[in-house]
Length: 403
Image (cartoon, rainbow, N blue to C red; front, side, top):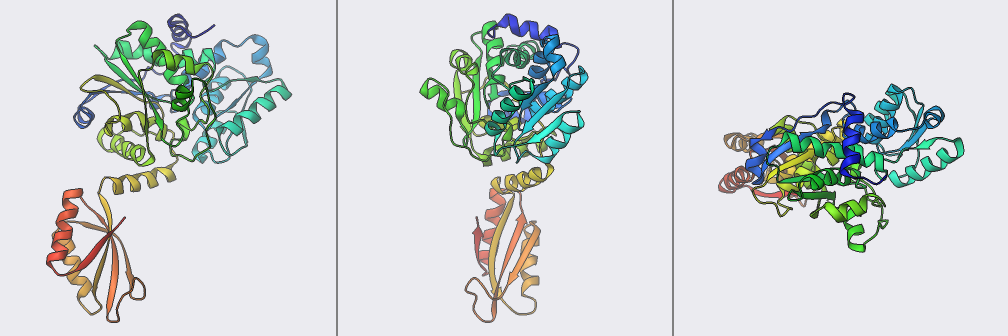
C-alpha cells in the first residue's frame, strides 16, 4: 500500500508504546541565532540513538509469520542497523546486518550488542546494500530496506504527526535527507494534515542524491564521497521516496562539511545535545541561512546521535577553527634568552590561551640568530583574533595566520 496519512496513522498506533515519545522543546538560543522560532525534535534520544527505530519497528510488526521465522537482513551505515537489530531481537527474530567497511566502530559494536550478526562489506552503503540483497536471496531472509519501503516510510512519518501536536502553529519543518525515507514520511504526514506548512530538505553537499534526482525527474546514482554525515551518505534516492519529495517538499538545500561540524558544536554548547553529522545537518542549513525561511515557527529534526568519539573530537577541533575560536599563528622572533617569555606575556595580556606550540630554527627560511614559533591559540572569536594580531604588530613581531 502506498504511503498516505492513513498508513502513517496506522503505523503510529502499531508502534505506540514501544518507542520513546521524543520531545520538541523550543530553543531561545537557536531562535536568536537563526532568525526562526526553533523547536528541536530530539529523536537522537531514542533507545538506539536515532529515528530509524520508527520505520524498522513498523516494518517488523507487519512481517508475516513465515517471514519472521526465516529471519531478516538489512544494510546500513549504522542507525538502521541498530534499529533492526534491537527490534528484531525484541520480537524473537534472527537478524543479519551488512555494514560498510568504514562504519564507525561505535555503530558496529552497538549493532552486535543488540543481537545481530554483523557482516562488514563494501566501501559504502550502496555496496553493502547490494551484498545484503544477494545474501538475503541466497539464504531466504527478508530484506528490510532502510528507506525505500512503504512501511518504513510510514513509520518515519510518525514524527510528523507528533510535531503537529507538539509545536502549536507550526509553520515549517527542516529535515535531513539521505535516501528520503524520513522526509517522505514526515512531509506526507504534515502536508496531508496542513498543506500550508513548509517542508525543507537538507543534504550534504558531497552527496546530494535527492537534489540530483529531483533535477533529473528520476533517481540517479552519483559518485561516492566521504562525509562526516555518514547517516545520510546515500548515492541514489529511493524509487518510492522521490515521488513523495516531488509532491510534498517545498525546498532542497545542501550544507558542506564545515557547516555540519559547526552545527554539531553549536548543539553541544548551546543545547547540551549530542548529534551525529546527519543529525545536525538540518540545523546547519538554518545556521548558515541556506533556506528561504524567515521568522517561521520551525521544527528542526535532530534525528541521530550515534557519533564515533574519535570523529567527535576532530569535529570539535574543526568547529573551533571554523568559528575562529582556535587559530594557528606563526611568529618570527630573535633567538635569545627571554624572547619567548616576552612573547607569551603579550599573548597572556590579550587573554588568549596557548593550546600547542612548535618551535623551529631550521625551517621556514629563518635567518641565523632568529627562530619561528607556531602557536595554536584558543580565542573568543574574530574580534579577539584581531586584537591579538594588533598587539603583536605593535610589539614589533612579524606574524602570519596559518589557515
